Image 1: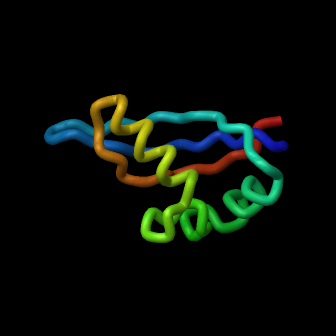
Image 2: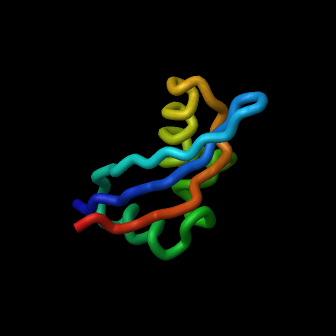
Length: 76
């Protein structure tokens, strides 16, 4: 299990915001995100990527629309 810090952007009409979340995940998913970033299948909404769906839901409950992730970092 690895912890990945994900920074993501979101917006409302007239406002932009950035937030971060640290998510524990299986090593193979973490490694794929660290290697491929937004090109990871886990980040593709059209491929039903679970990490992208999670970030979209987080933005929604914060009152924003999800724009995309901008950073992936391993947290030791």
